[in-house]
Image (cartoon, rainbow, N blue to C red; front, side, top):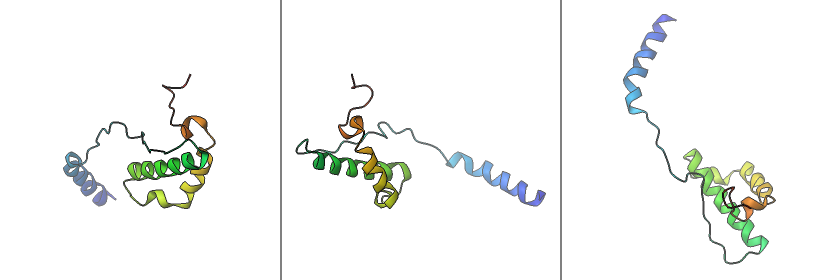
Length: 92
């Protein structure tokens, strides 16, 4: 056990300066243009925005194509502040 722990700790000490996190402004904000305020148009824009967001958060551009995300996009369209693009700072 000790033979495994010491090399692991040494490698973590060597590699830790290379690992770092980036602060990303507006990570959760996605703007998708719509041509009208019709429900179908808004829902399509919401679906595209969730796909972009999933790709940003996971680092995988294909993350937005999963069946699980499809189910979430249908549920999110029922929430007015998400469907209309209004965040807590703009709601009254």
